[in-house]
Length: 326
Image (cartoon, rainbow, N blue to C red; front, top):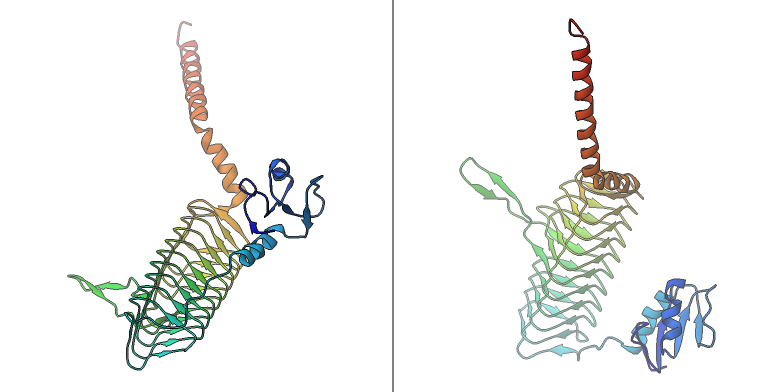
């Protein structure tokens, strides 16, 4: 075995995987050298490796064949490291990076080109900041966290108060804590707290273009898919999943293990473990039944209109039958 690839692309020397029977035919017709296969499935005549979780094993194989390339330790000549900052000797600070006064860069951390670490911020060991990632002042990023290109952690929260003539800015003096093993996608933004801490729990994964408002609390191992928006002071429980473009309003609560469907709007609370969908989310099954009825509304409207005509005609006939002389 010399590599790993998807079912359709795998060729001689490649390892691939199958999770369920739907893909057996594609695997049988493919040219992969070996297939990771769960118990109960068969691929006659093919090299197979049986295990309970083929996708997890495939991920491990990808890491083996394509390990992360660590940059050479040290500070690039074009980088700026302000006085008082501490950069571990095993860390790497790339071209045109900025490290503010009092910031700390942990062991084996990597700041790629043009990334920014503000004054007093802390980057944990083995953390990776891709090009253009921005960590503003006093923000903390945990060990092994990954911030993708263009992500911004620690921008001001959206806080204003109207004084009768104009919107006055509320100073945003809090911070952000990014836990260990968190991944933040490209272009995602995580605002600092007005006061206190915006917190992202250990192991949480945040997709591209997600907005996390000020003072939001996200538990461990949550999943936020692309373009999710979370309003200020909302709470997302451990293990919760928010599908693409879902919105969570200010102070709303999504319980641990809950699942929120794509484009759903959570304005109040979602119970732990619940699966909800739609605007003003409802239990997923009820939402699907409602959608089925919604699609039938044009036919139902025509039937109601026809029944109304027939009823009106019957009422008119009954009225004529009761007229004097009839």
